[in-house]
Image (cartoon, rainbow, N blue to C red; front, side, top):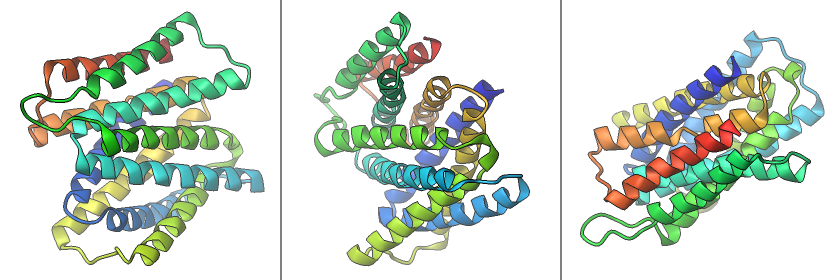
Amino acid sequence: MSIGLALAAALVFGTGDFLGGLATRRTRVLTVLVISHALGLAGMAAVSGIFDGSPTGADLIAGAIGGIGGGAGVAMLYRGLALGTMALVAPVTGVVAAFIPVVYGAVTGERPSPVQYAGIVLALLAVSLISRARRATGTPLRGVVLLLAIGSGAAFGLFYIALAKTSAGAGLWPLVAARGASVTAFVFASAMARQLQRTTRPILLLILAVGVFDVTANALYVIAVHHGLLSIVAVLVSLYPAATVLCSLVVLRERLQTWQMVGVAVALAAVVLITAG
């Protein structure tokens, strides 16, 4: 059950991230984040009221911490997707997001298997391949865009760990705390930067779709992680770049160099090996 839910979450996360990156190319990132996360907060609160759940203070605190981390991750990811090639940014983010829970597990007493170590080596190789400069056309994944991708993955790793720390009896209420924290942070950032702007109806609909995908994916992840192991569920969810890459190749007609295509494949293989271990 947990594997199926985690893979479903990966599909929804990846598609939602593609839509978020697309929206960020048409309006400011804080506008996308405030609207989509506000919708996510309302939707998650409504869904949480349907399911049984009695969260403790620790559950809500963990959710809020996860929300800050996840919010920062989404902000960096959307910015990276808007500035760089989506089919390159997403895999790097996914590899780092998969790597963080493995490191956390090792620090807390878990020991990666030889297969997982192989996956970690492949992950580093993938980042190198994907970051290779294009000689003829396109944009290389380096500099600010590469830092955004890596930072986003690290923040998502924090989100996975924090939400896994919540109790199963809390239901989906930790996600309400997570969205409440991220919305508060984004509204404050928008007020400070004065970047919240009005949008056209097509862009607004696109942002609302991002919010719906976000709510669905987060709910699937929380349910999955309470029925399985963090080290397995988190890295399976980190397969989400496959959906983002597919959307970018089909919808935006993005093209990759041979080495970069190999890097994307290696990145996904790295996540699979880490999971298999």
